[in-house]
Length: 373
Image (tube, rainbow, N blue to C red; front, side, top):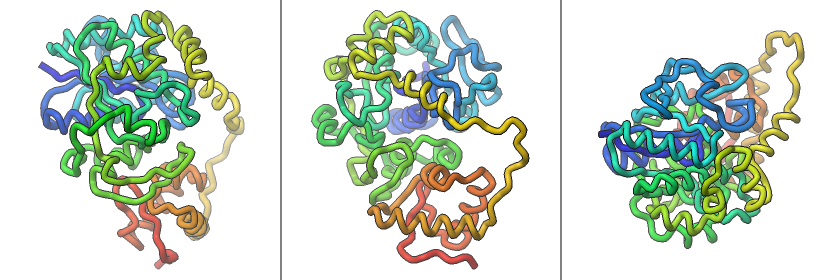
């Protein structure tokens, strides 16, 4: 028997699902994590989630169930970090395809239950937007979570929902979120994060990185790239809350309205009616307005290492003035507009000159000006 977990929203949720699985059952217990291939535009420039047909090399293990393996690859222009993630997480990864709506997802989940030989589902979300009411002004990505909730309900299979790191996704304000979640069931600790220790050097999930940091005892105020305000890392940030599927359905109007939905276009329409927006439409708009690369680009010209370091220290002083004590790797790279080679050079320099700055998976901001040696 394999445990069956569902990463509610795609993106970094498979990492959180692996952490919750390790805490509940031990890291070596066989498990399957179902997840969307629905990633940030910085990873996948094609808006919306990907289908099985957007990949080569998936492993078809039965009707309605395809596994992502390290040899799986997205078909250009799509992109995906799931193949690399599948080689590092521990649990196997199965692909959720939402294009047939809740009806199709329910078939996929039921097939996965049979393949795992289990009789229950564990649905995992990082941050808490899975219990969003839909009218929160900072809400950005409720659709994937709500589809997963509605699909689990449609299967009739017993499902437990776990919300890890309340508020770390910066979507539902903590004062609104915590009463919905109730008391925490348990807290993650450093021992459960070892397998994912290096993932955030290349994976852009900031909520997942913050969860790991909190589990490792990092405390302070962290700045992320994709959030309207800094994120406090305190003891509550490592908590995991357990809810019944019925509780989540009661809290989520979007999940209730999606019942019986048979297509992703229909799901988008429901999201517009309940929340006032479709996150896929927002992705389409961002992709349409992304800068067009030159038709004949030459090789990028790296900026002088000293110049990059000087820009970093000036930026760092501004972040400290804003009250931050930590930042994510993605925040540094995107705020400074660094190429891969420039980012590698900067982080190598920071590790060499001031190793205390690196507090995996975050970076500590220095209160004294850094100097090159």
